Amino acid sequence: MVSDKDAAEAAFQAQIAALGEAFVHGLPARRAALVTAWHDCADDANEPAWERLREVAHKLSGSASNYGFEALGAAGRELDRLLTGHTRCRVRAQAAAAVSRLRDALDGVIASA
Image (tube, rainbow, N blue to C red; front, side, top):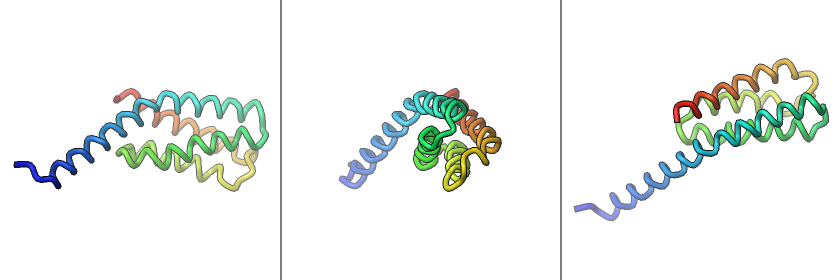
């Protein structure tokens, strides 16, 4: 006999699994947003372009680890921290490397899905 507690736990785990699947399903769009934001930064050194790039990284850093994608979360955190509170033109070379690592982490999760 299944207890109410066991049934509630099973329902909770099913919800978590569904959220994880939705997260993975949305990663190609997040990758596209990352690439677009990075291109916008190259074309426009103004703050809004760089803030969009930081926002993409920030959101990935916060959510990826919740679904077990530690490397993706770490790559997002790296870029988020790099862009937070710094003059963008001074971190362009570091940002290029961090963007590349984040893109590669996204590609790895997308390919394994």
